[in-house]
Image (cartoon, rainbow, N blue to C red; front, side, top):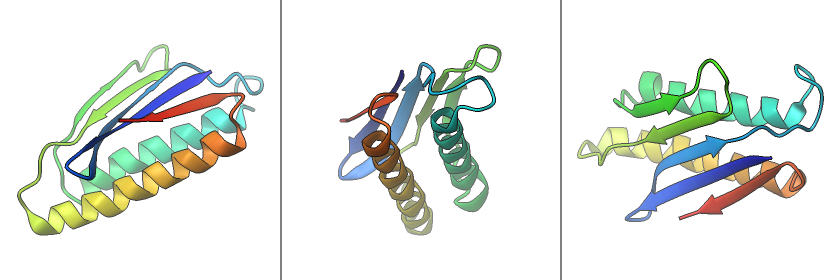
Length: 110
């Protein structure tokens, strides 16, 4: 099962952690894992490439099943607006996945 946690600070998403595997299908056929992977990687890429934010990212590239992302406090209004849009979209997507596939993923918000 995937354990997902989304952190908030002052009303903004400030980071997220993902651990585990969905085990909703065979390797390469697991749609829950694919959905979470695509959403999280796209979020990290968007924050870095579109919003221009220097994130703290920790992952287990060899075994998979672990990703931790921390967003710094932003003093740049334009970057903050972009980051909020990207991170709120991530949070909405994760809520949708968790509702549709609750057997394979749990989502906690802090």
